[in-house]
Image (cartoon, rainbow, N blue to C red):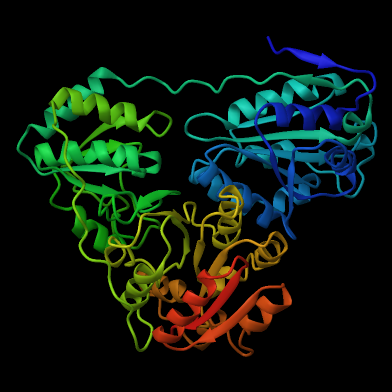
Length: 523
């Protein structure tokens, strides 16, 4: 039973804010509208909530995603009715794939006004269910606190969940609100001892075995245990291609991902006879292609699920270490830190330059799309850092995720965005929030003036692009002026045409506590 403290002097919005704060939610990413004005008023009246304005709802939801990945606890969003939620769905899709915990607060028409079908009336619940694990509409002011604490409980699941609470305007403004006490996060399902035995049997089989890590299994505690298993048995280690958060750099495993392209991934995985999945799914192609298989592993490979995405990978790997009696094993040294590279920007050159210069404990938000696919092998010897990937494939998450991550780190860590120019246009308003919050964010804008990934996909599906198709994939005529765009949003920016210019600008940006954008020509 949920304990509540009610007051006839408190409206529903105030009980909602009090309950969120009591439940550990102290950051609100917002783009409010009329239906949410009482919530905004409560935020003004009740201290303790850090309120961050995003200029479009997909910025808001992306920031909440980035916040969770670093803070490992949910923030809330404030979205205006159905269209506001709809604007944020792209990055909620990405957040769900990244297994981020978020509490969405969505305003709605007053309950007595809704039957009149006013212009902003929509089926919010149906939209919310496409990206949410938990959805509820408040129908009574006295229930708002209880619903809020249940939403936070759902978002706090070990695997991270999206919870959406819909609040009609009259439930916000009516008196009789009740503050609810926090609920414990739901426990993760236990690890199956039989799954541990099966995985151990496969590892003892003298076959080619791959341990595939995903999500929390790519963080440092899981990496250390997975390396003990691999070192003791000769198994190989890889990460899934889409992981929301990976621990990388010195002190962490030199962990590569399954390749993006179907041909490359199929070749990479062809030798493995046994696959052990740790919070991962069997590797499949990002898309289907004519005449090519959807699955990327060998057809005769045996699949063993050690832990599902909703289970604790540390517990699973510890059980496997114990079963195998795998001894302690030091993480391999990645070698000397690389030097700055000069000359024309290349994938390898930029990755090595970044590894040479990035500050200790940086956070990298990677939406480099095609240009950055091979960065990993060049950045293993960088200082220890966190690497945040686009997980759901809906472009436009890189800049908002970077912004939310910087807020979670409370400005104490450098956040570096590797950002493709085409996807940056989906969410460039993030730069304004970075400027407003004075966040230590450095954006390397990878400017090739086209949707380069789609040119590659054209070839993959067997189509031949002509002038009309190429015109739809080009970001030119006119060119985008990223220095002026950044300046117009309050962010200092400069152009770089060489790696030495980029290195100089990176060093300059790392010395300041405000955001900076480097417009790097890459072709």
